[in-house]
Length: 102
Image 1: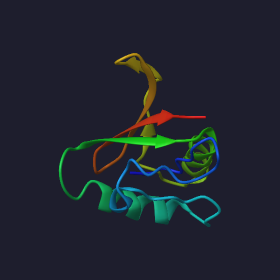
Image 2: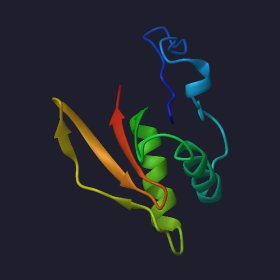
Image 3: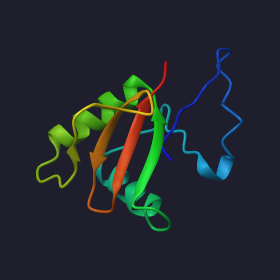
Image 4: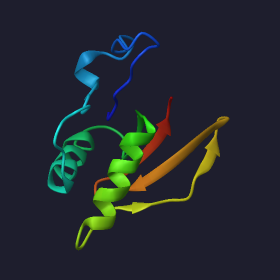
């Protein structure tokens, strides 16, 4: 799960087990890194995963995909599911459903 969840005080969210979190805040992270991260994320379980991220993470992913020469990743349209606005990112490994948070 890609996340940089923080509470109002700026502390890391603790409700998601540490083994299920990846906080990439301030990290150098390129297209190749993202591709490997997605490979690992979809190795086990469902071919659809939910990720929580901030607007900056969405912007970074968008820029990576736009600048990649031959990306096989594709954004789906923004949709509303269970009352939440989400974006789908279709990857060769599965679908990442992203929900932004403040």
